[in-house]
Length: 155
Image 1 (cartoon, rainbow, N blue to C red):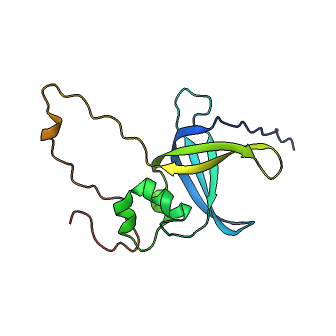
Image 2 (cartoon, helix red, strand yellow):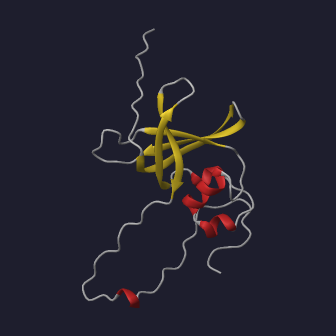
Image 3 (cartoon, one colour):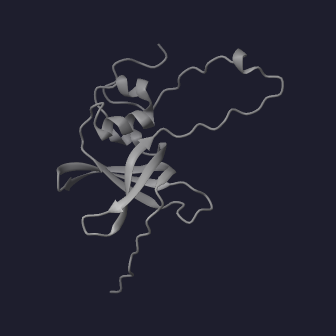
């Protein structure tokens, strides 16, 4: 059997558009961890559709990575409305990743996801004659079905 060498190219530190591909539970050196796979979205760039991995503990609190990252993906109101987080509801959601680089435990340079941020909203389309101060706020849309929701959307 022939196995090609896999190489790892370190990306420059910065902010990248991404989508959550999957979240899986893994046993790690610090106990049970959630392994996040993000797919970078950069059409035309050499890193487009490249996967980036990040880990966090399965602790769903406002100060833990999982809580902060869920807030970025779902919004504060949605996260405040649930008692239990189903990681499936995060899969497929767009976000921004803040990447840094540094040395791994094996001495090689690696990227690290230092933060997950909400995706940038595209600018509103230009409408001739429209006055932005007259616009009515949009009604909230329902996020994916959430286990343990305390109250429904639209109230």
